[in-house]
Amino acid sequence: MKRAAQPSSPGKPTTQLLQHDIFRYSRNPAYLGALVCFAGLSVLLDSLWLVAGATISILLLDRYFVRAEEEYLTSQFGDTYHQYRKVTRRWL
Image 1 (cartoon, rainbow, N blue to C red):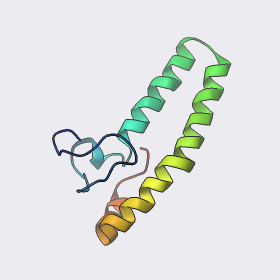
Image 2: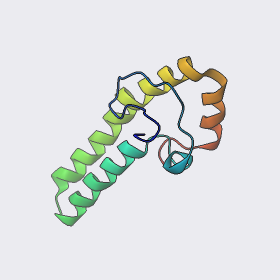
Image 3: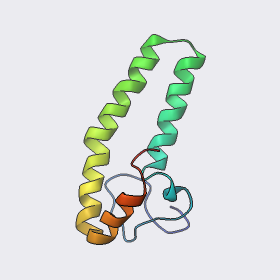
Image 4: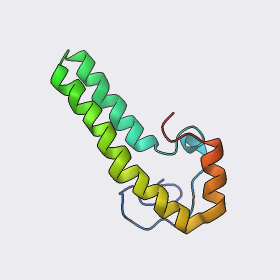
């Protein structure tokens, strides 16, 4: 994202649709990486509370951030984003 001069913070304007590098495999690699770390820490610490927190985080991210970003990207890039969605999964 930095090489493409795109913001990494949610809510900031995007000027291009990234479809290369890690974005070929996941439309949300930053969120996915954070959630994998959170889930891994939960297992490592053998904490049911952290497992519950990871699960809730996934649900909240998906419902409130990812879906809103998808709507925004659809409005910004239209058919290009639709085609990207067809070939690249949301998470993995």
